[in-house]
Image (cartoon, rainbow, N blue to C red; front, side, top):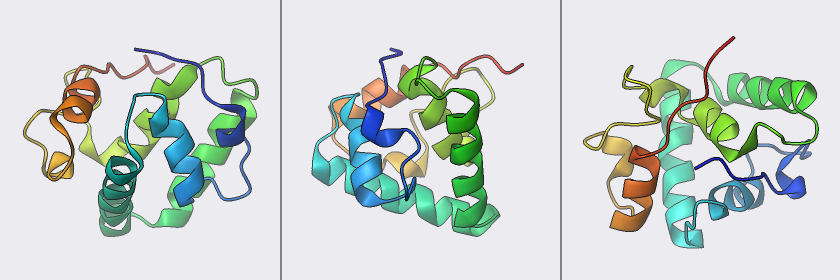
Length: 119
């Protein structure tokens, strides 16, 4: 599903902001409501396992290594979904609680998304 990342989501001043996340998941046809619900759930997961600043550092590191966004949306989503990794090459499994409250269309798109290969 790799699609080009909007320039507004690359090197954003606040990479975890609502507007930046909306730009990112808008590429996978998420509504603003779905984007906000998903962002809230993912930030909660990051707070449980690490801290949001760790997410910010990872996103900035990716921006630094991929300044033109050639790796696409999937690479950025893989950072956001780090703690939802089902370990089978997909971004998220269909029964992950992160998907609760999201539209079926967005859930299907996210479940069908493959994680980019790691170096």
